[in-house]
Length: 227
Image (cartoon, rainbow, N blue to C red; front, side, top):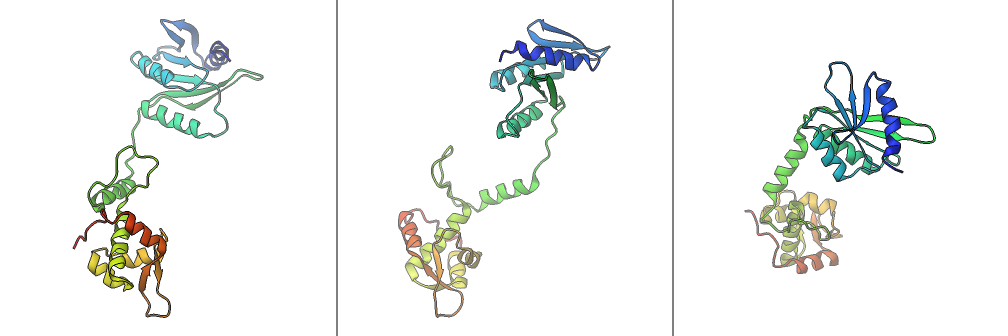
């Protein structure tokens, strides 16, 4: 496909809305004028790309009414979702154009000023994780290594205590380590490190072989008690 194949459908789409349309005006792929309104500019590309986005941003120096036009995204792909998110943040419109066999133009997004809604629950989780994490155990940019979260640090603190003291009641571990949710960590056993001791009083746990291995791997970096 060539960019020129997108022009005809876009021109017809805009003319149907009362615009006068001309191509290649001062470097702009498509310029449309309707009455006394601000001009509308469309940049054409055969795929959604960073150069297209930068081109659209440059055209915003001329008018707020800037659209990017590309062939349809396959289904409701992640790429389509990401393109919409990016265009919405930048105030760009987005058109998809199918030139054949039947010409069809769909306006996925119109240009508009972006007004982000703050995600307070997500912000709260971010701040809690930051405040509860001990030190800075990770390296920024890591993708193939396990992230040391505050929860994992708490689990390691509990595991380290059990490794040193043997089977212990959850309440005792919580008091000794400062991990108030030790009982929940044992009960959920998200990592497979803990096991309740059979035939004993309820609430006493010990380490599984997997838990002992994890402790030995992190023996020098287990967070100290916050108490």
